[in-house]
Length: 408
Image (cartoon, rainbow, N blue to C red; front, side, top):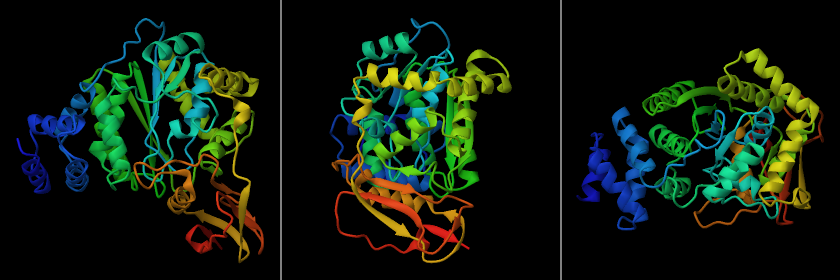
């Protein structure tokens, strides 16, 4: 086969055969197809999409590129949760401890940042000593010991997705429904979970910009889950404004800890909602009963203790979290009420500060980011601090406030 012919075929909106898909993607994994060729194919897919059959084939090819984790030796229902990514989305760090402290096993395979959205692995690596690459034996043992573990993709589990994921991040091909579905569902199925909850972020600060796109993604992922006999539930949540107040790796871990310690707000409400859905499908109880369990775990401190056990179990020092001491406050130039916060622009700003990757080889600065001092519906006076930049350079950054905050 010829990769150029395959690129041209997809460019012309034709359906690829399974053999063509397998040849292209497996050849990229073994190095015989180069970055620039796979980038061209990914862009053609991003623009022209894939049929359901092509997407099913891609999921299967991703899964079969490596091992499939067997968690059957761990008693109980295993429930995994995945978010499609959004600005300030640190929800995994909150729901994992809540759900596992309610007796549900939560095996979590997470990724690094994709585009302007941060990755759970990057956030956890802001904790000094935290080990994000677990062997299968370590992963299984931690699930047995505390019921919750997070690992990056091992070299043997969906290795094809791992290399494609990194390339998509830096080639403008993140916002593709079939590529998103294949990436997420291949990892979830290969990761051994019995049931899967997908949090589809929709809005300005997410890869799915419109409800129509979110519903299409929900539809294909639920179809893939059914095909593999995994109960898959997709929740669509708003991402037109950042999730929480902190954007940036260490900053987001700190905010997650604040929620686990009892801080209330929209972030807490969403975490409890998703936790309740996971508990509901794992224990086959009503949503109200599951929400009560989740709320009790949070209010009693059990969830926070579970988070501490989790960090310790993976070698992290929770007292090592550090944010940059170089700060710049962005002040309001007019009075009024905060009507909107542009999540995408905040995410781009955080990435520009060093919290994300522009190029595949970029190193992340874990201590930089953005903290929102004013949120939706807050009253603002001239001179009030709207948001604070945590930077690694002392030079001031000139910003147009209206690009980030709408104040009327």
